[in-house]
Length: 435
Image (cartoon, rainbow, N blue to C red):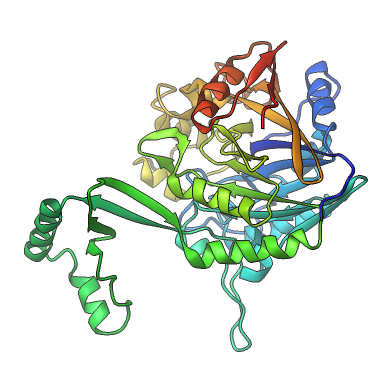
């Protein structure tokens, strides 16, 4: 049962930190920290591995092999954060050694953290923060990860596998009956389903749903609506709901974090359908807020049953082009050799600063929501705009400071409108009051 006293929350998006803070004595840092410390629950998504190369680079990564020296956690602490999610597409960039070392250093700096563990039960478990006004549970998951990174279930006769708390989803492409028949003909002529058909015959794959047709790695069905339908996988949805059920009996408030890059069509500012379904189901079963992050830009805010869903809070710290080293896999991807270095690699990826996240202004501004709840119900949300140094050299940009203009707020206002959420902007602060 929710506490009668007022509980306050602060949340930020991705913390892709790879450099040490130059100073904590300047006004920009102090102004930001003052806002963060308004919340009793203070959240960041940690999107780097933090260790001294205790792990080797994985064969796959989240895009950039994300590593930072453990002391960056001291800077994260300096901002005032006390809770971290770290289930994301970079968790296993440095394999299991990097995962285990990162957890060790996170624990050393005293953060409450969730979403990763030594097996699936551990990765799925709620973690608790005891505050003066009550107890808050954090559950974290990710829908964006390599399939081998999902934590494995523990059994009496087999050890579990370390990894992330996964939220997998089903994708179905709906086409016309005529288009489906064409796909079947193409499959018959090309043999694109040969391996799958044999695997079914030999018992290595389950029998296909009779209403679906597999075409390579994709599933199609006929229907009047044509397009992509996504839904959360039941086993993952059920496991997370079970964690919420436990947490709401052990804490006053339950917060769910989801790292997700998946989008509607080709629009990164719109969450995929399964993310909306997941978020609403979590609240239906007792969660008090959903904190989304992943696409590195803002997405809209929905107030669902008097509880907030932040579909993406963009970036809080973003320094993905100042990692110290990159494995050879990165260089090979861009047809580079042993004579090249990290500066060469990032120049190549960005076409010398002409493309990529570095030239997208939406990546370099965001908002920090501060909200208060009483008896499990939302009272107010304030939104503080921040900017991260768009236009600066890559070795300087990526640190947050309060923005002097409402650009990010205006974007969030527009993105939130389809969810029926009204954002009022007063003196460069956003307010959401009508629930």
